[in-house]
Length: 164
Image 1: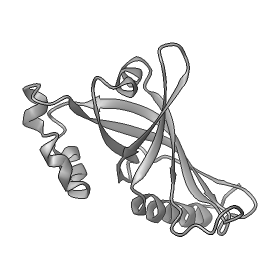
Image 2 (image 1 turned 120 degrees about the horizontal axis):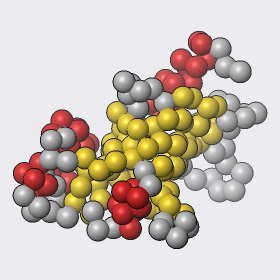
Image 3 (image 1 turned 60 degrees about the vertical axis):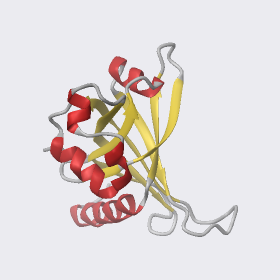
Image 4 (image 1 turned 135 degrees about the horizontal axis):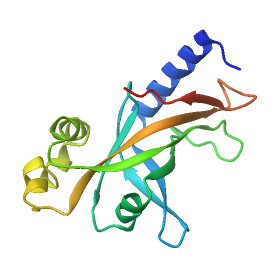
């Protein structure tokens, strides 16, 4: 069990770590029940805990989310690889995903701040007029799990997602 001050410390580590990463792996469930893993650029927001990514609405992962919004994923960063045996740092998450509409102006603007080149692909106007196949997706994170063999050498650290 983690005491409150340990939870606060773990949450700060989580925020710093996830904010420093760029790509996440997202797992959705296909129509046949098979897992589908995608690598995606993402933006994170904390309190409430949300992950954002863009995807064409015609992609398999987008259809999977419309059918079954339950998702899981991972975020791993290896700043300099020394090879096998290197201490591992990573975060996994579980949550519920949904496609956002043209009214998600603030969320899309935050994504654009992190990824300025995305402005040419997607905007609220393009979504509203069907002028793009791109859509913004939001994952409400229910649970994070930190794997850090330096800070938490004996076990992973589970942190509940914050909802607002």
